[in-house]
Amino acid sequence: MPSTSQKLEFSGHSGARLAARLDLPNGPVRAYALFAHCLTCSKDLVAVRRISVELAREGIAVLRFDFTGLGSSEGEFASTNFSSNVSDLAFAAAYLRDHFQAPSVLIGHSLGGAAVLAAARDIPEVRAVVTIGAPADVGHVLKNFGSSLQEIEESGVADVTLSGRTFRIEKQFVDDARAQSIHDAVAALKKPLLILHAPLDQIVGIENATEIFLAAKHPKSFVSLDTADHLLTNPEDAAFAGQVIAGWLTRYIAADKPQGEAPVEHVRVAETGSGKFQNVVQAGSHRLFADEPESVGGLDSGPSPYDFISIALGACTSMTLRLYAEHKKLALGPIAVDVSHAKIHARDCAECTEAERGGNARIDHFERTISIDGDLPDELREKLLEIAGKCPVHRTLEAGAKVRTIVRSGGRG
View 1 (tube, rainbow, N blue to C red):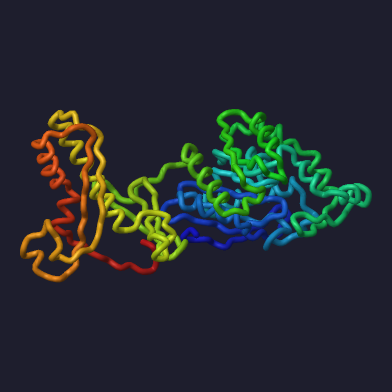
View 2 (cartoon, one colour):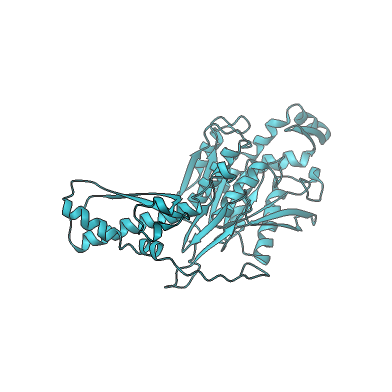
């Protein structure tokens, strides 16, 4: 989970209080996104939560809320329709605008996808729109009403079973659905659009994605969700969708800003709340994860702390050798550096001095193997070994460093 998930509520189109959650990332917020769920779903659907988590990990805050009469929100579902859902989205955007920052991204799943396509025109700050398994025609939802549709037409109201749950549907819902034109909304969108859809979707067929894609103007993108079902019940499918969305959005939202002032190097590491050891790392404008392997209770979602030390040594070595080769105008082939780390007894350290090998203490031992394409004369091989030893990280590891620690309370500082 992200570091912070705030429980919020705001007034919807009818004045009813709508339940919401705002998933905030660790570190600076790059953008705010508004998530619209499917007709019979809620903000707490596993897929919605997982996608929000993936976006929060990339610095994107996500507001997910329950439409009027659904989930934990107030109001009567029977009095709602597609238009009221679009209105609820506008109220949610206004809430973000007034209390945080207006959403620059709209994401909608299933009928929520159609809703964000219709709502985008009325939220001027929106810079990108994403749909997941969205219908190209709002009237598509009526196909799921079965024989109840005729009863609604004749009696004005009927109970409809959708996804195992019973909902009271009024004729005004049917009339409103038939009156919508998603095709026109898409054609007039004038915003980057990402369409995610599963070819095997049994609820909203893949032909809907085709219709939306053809109606949209460029820039537009389509990504297949392969074997996923309509609700993305497989967590891996939901995670993939979230990762694709986050990657696509990098072209349309602000880049991460460095956490420290140059020339001071500054890295921020903070727990994500997901798993036992996972931390998000922000180094300059780069985000990544630190974790531990599953064998010791981690999620294996990123390098371990000692992996990062090995990465630093290997990267610094490669960079140092390349700088030397350029300075000496050497035609040095591609460089690769393998680094392994272990704790060994000092007496077993072949590179240590006699004094250092004198005790039984265990020391950190890094073994570095430098591979260079092409033949190397023995003289150059020895010189490269010497230059590798001058790598700044190598020198820091051998000389040691002073670490000053400050403990702060009352906030993340």
